[in-house]
Image (cartoon, rainbow, N blue to C red; front, side):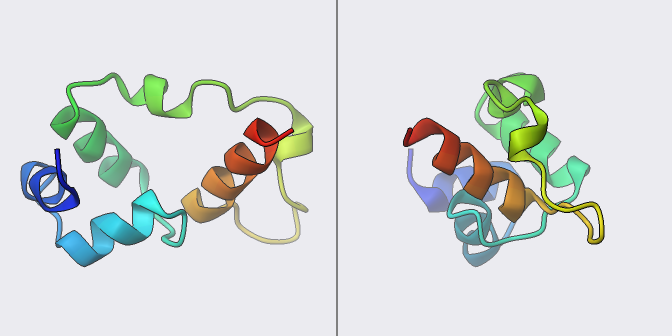
Length: 78
């Protein structure tokens, strides 16, 4: 399935979906739910494997989806 297909199913602009996929967007929970629905997945599956405080940023700022995805990629690369 292409980015455009998923974006259309999630009712998103393809550019915004691409930013989420690359970990560059600060998405809200409802966006994650829409993407999961488009992929016929439980939203929890998109978050699987993300745990532990080592993946959390300093509490002095908000934790974005982009941070979450970047932390997941970093964790998976080790």
